[in-house]
Amino acid sequence: MTLKLIYPALAMILWIFIVGVILAVRRKNAFASGEVRPEEVTVSTERYPVAARLASANFSNQFELPVIFFALIMLAMEVAATGYVMTALAWIFVVSRIVHTLIHIGPNKLPLRGAVYGVGAIVLLCMWVGVVLAVL
Image (cartoon, rainbow, N blue to C red; front, side, top):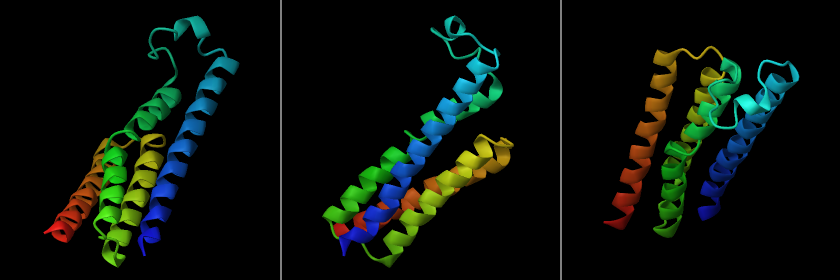
């Protein structure tokens, strides 16, 4: 049943929206506290406080590896590579993105964040192999 892959895809989309809300709240708080004025960020976001810049960077990250994830989900469904292994890999990827965000907008420990990012990239590679094997 191909619907098994719909759920992690929907979860990933929801997470992107959640990160967008976190970004909006942090920017709103920066304006409300007076840390930044609108005219200071019309051209560049460098004047935002660190918390808002981290949320912004993480929101941008949601359009890097996840783009490959969504493509692989669609390809997997097209070639019927929708078994339990592919589904588990998809959920592992989603969890890796959530953990990556929590590290990025929280303590922002680069080695840990990089390791979690790497796990997500490896999972995508495994998903790609699954799709290729289904095509062969």
